[in-house]
Amino acid sequence: MASPAPSAPTGPLDPSAESGWKEGQAAIEPDPTTPPADYYPLDEDMLFTPPPSPQATLRQPAVLTEVPPHRRKYAISVASSVYHYRFENGRRYHARSESEYPFPNDEKEQDRLDLMHHLHSLILDGKLYVAPIGKDPKHVLDVGTGTGIWAIDFADEFPDAKVVGTDQDAIQPDWIPPNLTFVIDDCESDWTFPSTFDFIHARTMGGSITDMPKFFGQAYDNLEPGGWMEMQEYETTSKTDDNSFPEDSALLRWIDKLNLAGRKLGRPLNIAADLRAQMVTAGFVNVEDHVYKVPMTPWAKNKKLKEQGRFNQMAMLDSLQAYTLHLFTKVLGYSASEAEVYLVDVRKELMDPRIHMYST
Image (cartoon, rainbow, N blue to C red; front, side, top):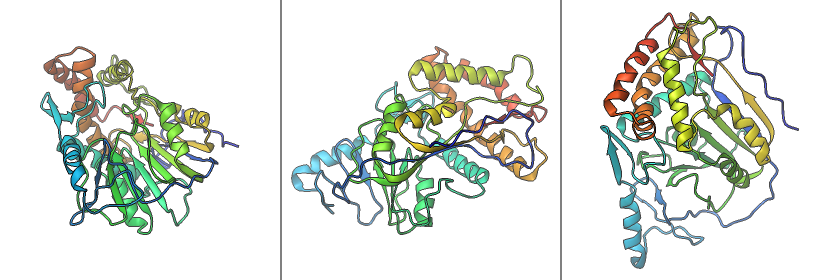
């Protein structure tokens, strides 16, 4: 039986209360499968492992340390295409299609993603996950790994686990734990992993997924019986308990426009509140939905909440351009200069300590 989801908090932000992101975990009972182990597909993906012994893997139940001569040209073309980017309004984006992932992948964005990782760590009191996965996970998947920082930390914490991080962008470091592999792959494509996982992790996927039922269906099918999936997601909104937002708030108008653009693009940003129902529909059981309030600026008196607010504010300021430029210019019809001007008042509100804003 699925655990009931607690209702969203409605009272004032309690400085002594827990704060964190929305978590969704689920145990499943799928039919067991026994595919061959230790290989990953190369077609349309590129497998990255740390030097000095990079591996290229074919659709065979064996790992090759060298690409065969008759496949070298194909493998090289796949590898080089990974680094084909497009540049737009001074930012670097994935090259496949303007209708796909709407956020940049340049170094500035990578720094923001690593900052968000630190914020997640603060919220979860240093923990990487909250699902009851036990002390001996064997096979772990990190979907949308980004810079790979979560997967690296997890692989370090569990050196006996085999960890796989997937992302459509090759922005992960070369030197990684020996039990970690990065695979360049689009999570919306068909999953072709050779074996199932006992833990699947994903976070901040808003704006990345066009077909959530397919996403959760593939996650379900790729979990071991009794395995767990954890989603860490924030709502694309902002609230106060004391009505301290100014009338006609620039920040709230900006958020509304972002959500409108995401829906028009077919990649909704504000997905957190729907995750539990979608996981239950996909067949997951024991689904728990944890909702916590996190200050968006350092206005709270509580030391822990103030630190969360300080890093959340930094992340928000860094995200303004990253979230706005493509969605405003390509979806909503703004010019780049109009989009930048729009953000001036948004930044002012994010720097105003009189506005006691928080996110969930």
